[in-house]
Structure formats: structure tokens, C-alpha cells
Image (cartoon, rainbow, N blue to C red; front, side):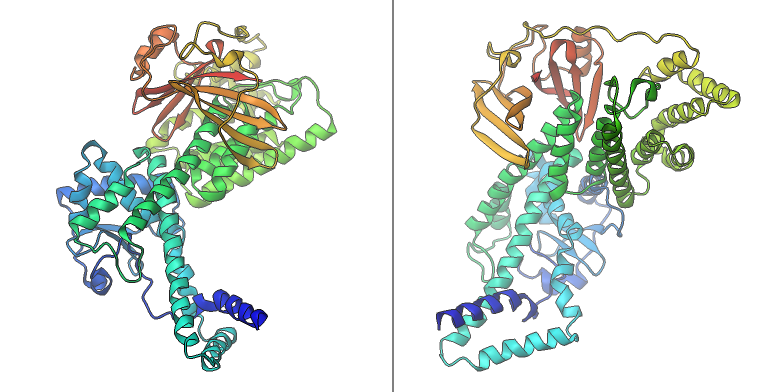
Length: 572
């Protein structure tokens, strides 16, 4: 009897989502709005007001940050109906109510982040295809298997000998549907928050307070039938925020590993993010780190010129057949990632340029030339206009490698034209090689820096730090933290096969100390460069950049053009 009951429960649990599609799943309530579902088709579409213009700018930044243009971008409107923020798939349209906007405005300098939190939540419903999941079975009710499942469900109810079983089964069916809705809400909080972060709005950590104010403004009861309680909804926000913070930290660790040249570890960290959140930038970053790894498997005479994709060039001495196979696998993997980025946004210029570099390194100059001269050049406009310099660089390399007098003359002309505008120095370096001159040698870097410290501690002398938190990045790499490394700093480090590969001591926001050259939190880029000079290497982040000074073993993390933290690092 127990086995039969268990079987009945398992069958019912797995099929429940296929039955009882009585409600409309065209919209998803972030909190239980009283009447919007019934009024969705006639909801007032307000635009052009000051509130709409402000919210629209936030919305456009979110759409751009996601970078997924495979499907129509939902229209955005304000509404005066009794809702908070909703997506209606018939448009598709996304609505933010004027009352909800006013609540977001109450957060002062965090108002845009609050708006991004609400709109990122709704956009995540769209990008994660939550409506498709719920509507799939309704659209396929005529299939034989669907009819059989319906018949089985009705037979299960008809065969119930206990007068108490039927209402329990019906109640269980309702609860399963509610749990699926809650799961979608949690995912939208979590990934919507990361979308807002990636758009440059930072990590909004007041989601629970926003929910509390919305409940009060909309006069929503603490307990609503068919939905979680207000307190539970707040807890969902808090739990999602914790999970989002972990994803943000994995992403930021990937950025740190990239800027210091630990490309293989960075590749694995970016892939960890990619499993849960897909955007053109993440795909591109995974491809770039695979491409940079591949450079290490080239012989010195095989990699004469410097490509515009690389952050630096770690030349190898000699490689065998096995290494050739590894590098080709990495290059092909990078191309797959660049193709994925392009599939999300066909106008994403960096991916075309990077793909051209990968094809050139694979020994496919014809396709490499096409992707640079045609595809990359075509989309290097607007905010990508400066990339034309990189297009000219890769074309010059391809022409120089043609080993024909005509090609070499074209390459010299391209490199020469770039000398006064190319800040990377790649044009000057490649032109010197082409003219059979010795390029300027890179300066020798000291092995370490004893002057920099945070709270009197310097991670350069650390070897096997303790941890109080870690997650597995993959089966061979962990991301570890010591959140109390000192009073005003925390420690990020990766362990691979039991060894540390990179240690990063990071200042906390309340640190009032200074670097050895009197730089404090809040300093500008100009102030940093006055004391440390232009950064030899840097990378862009969603709302700033990371500057790397290898000779001092220090990184500066800027957000909104101000120093948010600095990092002492040690590579083992």
C-alpha cells in the first residue's frame, strides 16, 4: 500500500504541471497585484512623461547589458493601473506603474538601482522564457500523450476510495503550480539583480525594503491567497541577493585573474558565471581567455607579431605536437564562444575582431581577413567606432604574414597610419618587426613590493591562507575567501589541485588608510596616474575599470570613475 501511495504521489507530482492550466500565465506578479491580470489588455500605455523618460533610460541600459537581440525587445511603458511591474507577452510589453516608480524614487540616490531591480526582474522572465515553460503544455493539449495524461489524472481522482483524498490531490496540484511560480520569481530576483549589476547599477541590497514599501503603498495584505506571505517574499529577496552576491564575486574574481594574466583560471571562473547567466560579454570573455591561453602554446618564431586582442604576451620557448593540439582546441573553443556572442547580438563588434584573431592564429588568413575587413569593420560604429584601429592592426598583421612585397607594403602603411593614435603600442611594435628593427624591450619587473600594505599586512608574503568560505568552480578549481583577513581587508584566492594560483587582498569599503603613494578610496583616475603613471594593463568592467601595476603588485578598481577598492596580489 505504501509503495502504491508513493508511486501515485510521484506520478502525480511529475504530471501535475500538465493539468489544470486554468489561469493565464501571460503575466508574472512580482508581488500579488490586485487587478492587473484582469485589466492587462486595456492597461494604459503611458510614455513621454518625466517618469517614463527616466525609467526608459534605466530599461535601455538593462537591455543593452543583456545584449540578447535574438528576439524582439519588449516595449516599455508606464501605467496607472494597480500593478507594480509586469510583463505581458502579447506585446511583448513591460509595464512599470507610476506608484511603483514613486516608491523607487523614495530610495534617493539608489532610485535608479531600485528601478533596475524591478525592470531587471521582468526582463529575466522574458529572457528565461518563463511564459513558454508554462504555456507549452496548453499549446500541445491535442497530443496523444497529453490526452492520456489528462485521462490518467481524472481516473486517479475517480478511483479515490477515500473521501479525503480527492481534495488533497487537488490541493497538491495547486501547490505544485505555486511552487513553480515561486521558483520563477526567485530566479528573476537573482538573475535580474545580476543583470542590473552588469548594467552598471551596482548590487542593490535593499530588495526586501523595496518589497516592504510596495506592499504598504499598494495596500496589499500580509497574506494573499495563492501567494507567499509578505515576510516570505522579503526573505526570497534576501536569499536571492546572497546568491547574486556570490555570482558577482565569481565574476569579479574572473576579472582580477584576467588582468594579472592567469587566463586559464579566469576562463574557468567566467564559465562558472556562464552556466547561470548568458550575455554576449560573458561569452566574449570566455572566448578571450581561451584565446589568451592558446598564445602560451605557440613557439616564439610562430608568434612574431602582437595581436590586438591580447592583454600581454607570454612567449613560450618550444612546444611539441601535444601542445599544438591543445592550442588548436583552445582556439576552436574561443571561436565557438565568439559565435555565441554574435548570435545574441549581430552588431557586437568585439566578437568579430576576436574571431578574426583566433582564425589568424589557426592559420586561416582568408576567413580572418573577411571577419576583420568586412564583418568587424561594418559594425565598428557608434560606441565601437574606436575599434577601427584594432581592425587595421589585425589586417596589417595578416598582410605582413602574406610574405609578399605588396602585402608587406600595405602592412607598413597601416601600422604607420596608426602610430599617432594607437595608445596600445602594438602598431609601433609590429612596424619595428616588419622593418627588421628590434622593438623596445619590456622593462624588467621587480619580484615583489614590500612597501604596499593594508592594515600592515601584505599578501605578497602569504602562502597558505586560511579560508572561511569557498565554492567549487569546477572539479579542479575552488574559489576561496577569507572575509576577515584583517580589520579592513578580505582575501580572494583560487586553489587548483591543492595549490594557490592567485591571492588578492582587497580593501573593504570602510578603509580610511592609503597606499604607499598616498592614494585613498574615492581617488580619481587622474590622481592615480599622477602617482603611479599610466597603467601598463587594464580591463573594462560593467561600471568602471581595473588598473594593473605589476611592478607594485597592486590593482586599482574604479567604479563610476572613482576608486572603490585597491588590491594587493601575489601569483604563485
